Length: 91
Image (tube, rainbow, N blue to C red; front, side, top):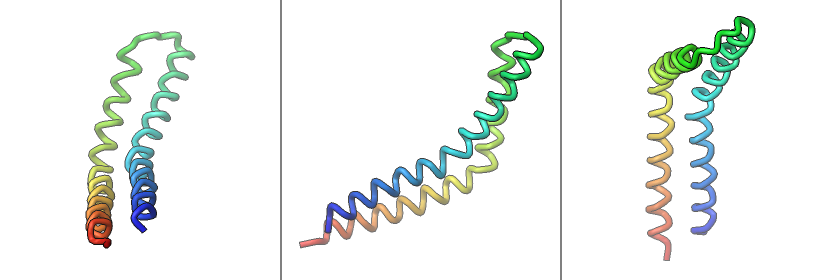
């Protein structure tokens, strides 16, 4: 019984990582791709041109998705503590 709860907790941990990280990474991927295409078309190879838009998008996405991320992590933490009590309470 305990190993199933641990395995389920690990699966849930991976799912939480995917839920919290994927939207931010996908937005940064899209912005990076757009900036790379613009740099290739205009042949402007400035490092700050690639970095600053990504930084702005990351900040904006964290502001927008922060409450969602906190809620997902809070729910997972509550579930994790409940499972820890269940594992510890087993004979």
